[in-house]
Length: 376
Image (cartoon, rainbow, N blue to C red; front, side, top):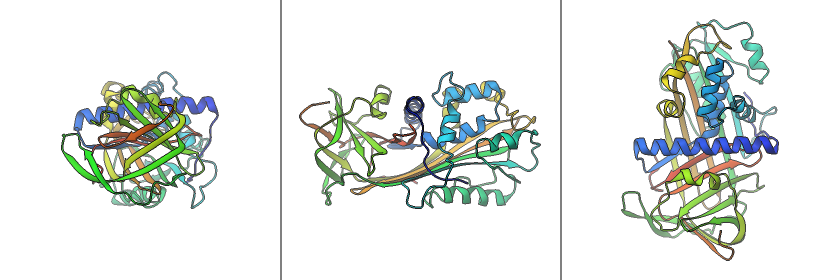
């Protein structure tokens, strides 16, 4: 297992960034429509890495379906770019802001095609082979996830996954703001999606060292972390009723058209743990049951297996000093701006996106409707 950030050229970064933003918007919008949850957090990077790894062995139809589902359109090689960005050549230092990795576990009863291991080796991936119906597989998979997320996510599966293989993507992020918020965060009102109001610790930052974007409906800030490789966009509705119409905000989430300006930021301190099976949502986004039937994996095996579950767990903690975040995804198969002053006041449901500016990866994105509701 290798863990570290990777780098990409500008054109490649823009392609990945656009796909990741589209994937974030789709996942959040569809999950919100399905669940109506107050808080939603997803990790497009770990999801695309795990599915990108699976797509290495998929049929042509399967590769195309996965690429479309991940926001790459007809760019079938797109998922491999995420996979390569999440699979660095050298291990991350213990104190590196971002550590990332991928892994794949094949069932020991699955007959692999002769070229499978060599193909994976070309992508710096050494698979494990074990009994996916046995209890030890749970311990091994969860152990990998725990290590890859620096203990932030202790488990991704609760029972033996079975099936033909499990592909995994995981990341861990920890960094301080370039400019810390004020040390004290007094309570302030926050309007929840149901219209009720709660009191939350509201962080405050004023000055002219940040980049902003604003229009009649939204005000946003692109907050820099130390070193400026990583940034977090926070988008708040000017009306204070809460922003959830993400489809109109994809370019905002990517950090486009932000300019330096005098500004003032009010942002709740918040933490969140989230998790779900994204397979139903991904079906609706292009990995339909019919397409999934065609998405067998001849690059791995001649046996008839298909995607079954796409499990993801995420966590984030944002305070005055910086951000901690982690995410893990397991893909499981089965056989058969204002120029003078911009004020960003996130006092109702707001969106966020944590991104790597060098690779275009979206490490995390979400909607926060109740900063005091930490999740599972």
